[in-house]
Length: 384
Image (cartoon, rainbow, N blue to C red; front, side):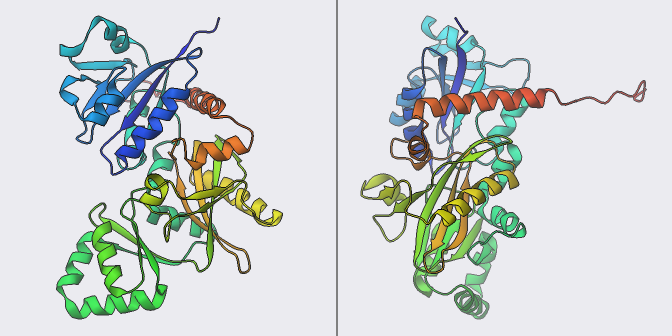
């Protein structure tokens, strides 16, 4: 009988997407095949406290951190297990958890400090296999401004956009003449309506659709609460929203596309997670030529930004002329029961449980390949 793999599922985090992460983690924990895997749940509070144990998900939901076993990962590559910080709640039933070697990490940390390359850097230092993109791919994909620049440089079509820093925005507001000029020029270039987004956040947190100058000001003020860089993007007229799931490492594959029909004016946080009225059409009703183009673009952008394991790639398609705009790449897509990433693979023939198996296998394979790379260059006695 094959040895079970110890999988550390990490969730929560210091992010505006903390709550979404908990729902995603619940679904993953529920669907992990316990005949193949031992589960090591690790939660991170909104304040950045690390906790562990079978009840860590429930404790994060309730906010009752004082009752939690405080433990963390160390960057020491020789440890490969949790390090207990407070042994007060180290009951006998939890002792094996605290000393159990971690074989692979499954991060379900949407947004800041989880999807942006920061925690991936910790996994690299700790020499642990982990599901999803590496440090570079995570950081680039998380920053909407940077990913747009790279995709544009490769010839991919994106909606016209500008960006502004939080400090520059504060300065503009204090200088009325320059402020009015900036608003006028931005309005002329992009036209109304336009979308305003924090550059480094997902799940539609902090995103607004501005229909006029006053709404644009309000939207930038909102986005500036979440990030120091704000993206202002032209709205593609008469667009349909299309999402594609990508799976793999060096030879990624794209799922059938799905169409989102948002319950609100756009696919905002409430439309995604709260009101339950948004719909999806899987597969999306696209001409075969356009579906092929979308799937090829999804794989191309995945490889361009050096992603791995999984990603959900979002598109806007203008029905008049079937113009395909790349919208954004998401390296840790939602894994809730209503999330498009697993749903698209289910429609493409891969069940939720099987999808988790593949992702864990891909993480271990990628780690083993990286282990073959040289990390030393010996020149005899050079340092003496």
